[in-house]
Length: 96
Image 1 (tube, rainbow, N blue to C red):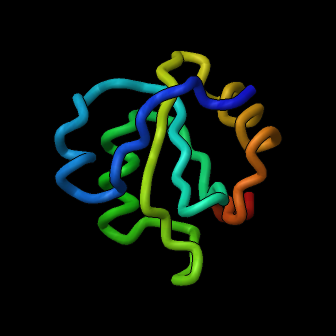
Image 2: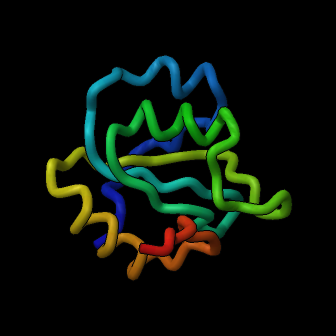
């Protein structure tokens, strides 16, 4: 699975704040020709958290744009998107 065709949005506060709250699904953050991170959940909330410093990427993998897919099955879809897109960064895992 890949993201449906759409116009990428800038990964900045104004663009994210303009997106409606409460929409769940998956989002992909990218820069140039590489996927940086695939995330899932309440899209606006997660993107704002990333802009506020909650992110797994390094300085040389700063995302510039984002795309999304709305879906209630976001956990399953996110796994498929990670496999299809191969982002350079992944979320840190926590020990049990």
